[in-house]
Length: 103
Image (cartoon, rainbow, N blue to C red):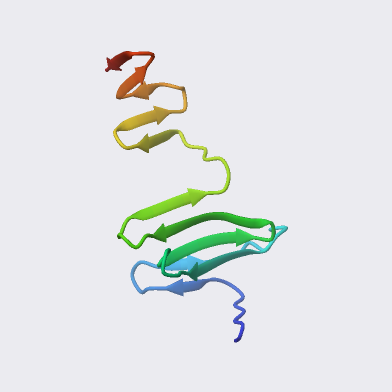
């Protein structure tokens, strides 16, 4: 029911801080939103003026789901036991066309 405006940073914590800042040069507004319901008890979502970008949610069984609405760029991506690197190398086991290769 209200709005708070701060010129500078909002900081929480004494020794280690969590801060929220703006460089005031974005062409759109961004919003963090915390919400939930019976099927998605806790959802933390980042939106901008064009829609949602990403969210993290806690599921009813306690597991966590992280979803991105677009591409992910990473030098190294770890998914389970497999490691995918930006040069296309895959480390782990690979299954295809009836053969299994482990290295």
